[in-house]
Amino acid sequence: MISKQTFNWPVRVYYEDTDAGGVVYHSNYLNFMERARTEWLRALGFEQTYLRDVLKVIFVVHSAQIAFKKPAKFNDLLTISSEIGKIGQGSLEFLQKISVNQLSNQPSNQASHVDKTMLVEAIIKVACVDADTFKPTAIPTAIKVKMEQI
Image (cartoon, rainbow, N blue to C red; front, side, top):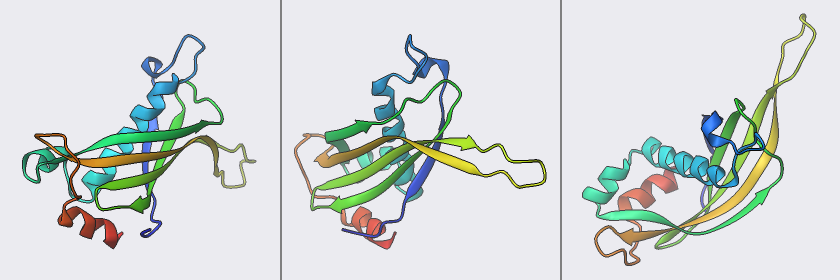
C-alpha cells in the first residue's frame, strides 16, 4: 500500500458517449477511467510511448470490478479519480471513482458550491508486460520510485 494521494481528471460527456436512452453507455466509463490512468502516468512523467519504446513495457488491464450507482448524462462534467490501492512487483491495483459535479443553487448573496454525486466505483488491476512479448514483467524501478513519492 502506498500513499492515498488521489489524481483527478475532468471529462465532459458528449453525445457520442451516450446510448439511445440518453445516458452514458456502460463501456464508456472504462474509457474514461483509462484516460485518467494515462493522464496520471503522464503527470508522473511517463508518456505511453516512452514506456513502450524506451522502458519496453506496457500496462494492460488484467481485471475490473465495477459498481454502477447512477447514470451520467449528456453534457455532465465528470471527475474521474484514481488512486493506487496496491502495488505489486508486476501489477497495480487502482481504486477509481467517477462522480458528476453539480453546482448547488444558492441565494445570490451566498457563494455557490459544487456537490459531487458518485456514479461509478471500480477496482482496476493492471499488469506490466513486456512490450514485445506481452509476457508479465516487473514494473520498472523508475516508475515504482515515482509512485512511492506520491
